[in-house]
Image 1 (tube, rainbow, N blue to C red):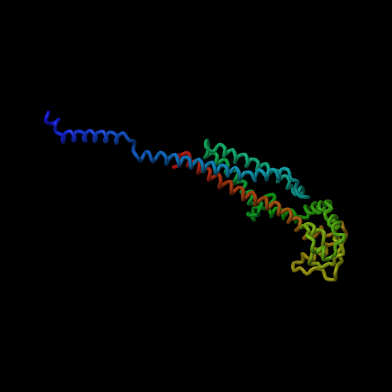
Image 2: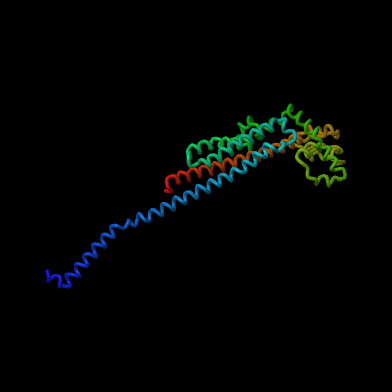
Length: 303
């Protein structure tokens, strides 16, 4: 024993053994390096998922604001003159109320996305698809079926060109004194100046004879006939030329150009509304689908 204690080689070996054992114990007590790396990565993914969900939620809310603006316009803006004869103001109010429900449901689903994401997607998709369908009908996407859809191009054309409806419409246009106002604004205008004047579709079609008739301008509501009237190939121009009278109670209210002018004004308004419904419904559908996907991703920890 004394020999071992006095032997420096043996003492060194024992010290090295103790050091090795201590190092092994410390190594075992250390957490695995892979686990320490996975924890920050998981936290980063969860944070990224929350940021994405929050951004899409804000975007969806912002997309709903134009819908709210259109509701205010539809419910409070006065309709075009003589629209009431075609029951269009009722349609305008109905679409406004429907859009109010779309606005409320869309934002309610955004607010409750974490609690019922699948049910919320189903609930919001139903009114958005209906909104898309109505918009496509108003822009005339359904050529055969749109005749039964109030406000669609085919429906409007059918009503305006119907003599029973047109008798009421032309009386309404006459009572609006639109042609009288045009005459009052054009008293000092010569022929060239009047030709260069920008007229509304109704003023152009109802208050003056068709251009094809080649009548001589005297004033806004009085035109002198030439010997040859109308050279239209389908006879419609000749009928309009014959229908024109310098009587302020008649003018061209019975002309096809007058019907075309009124139809153009009404159709443009409802076509723009239909295009708005189509674009907004598509944008909101895409936004809610992305929000649903991002919410599911966040729920599973951003995996």
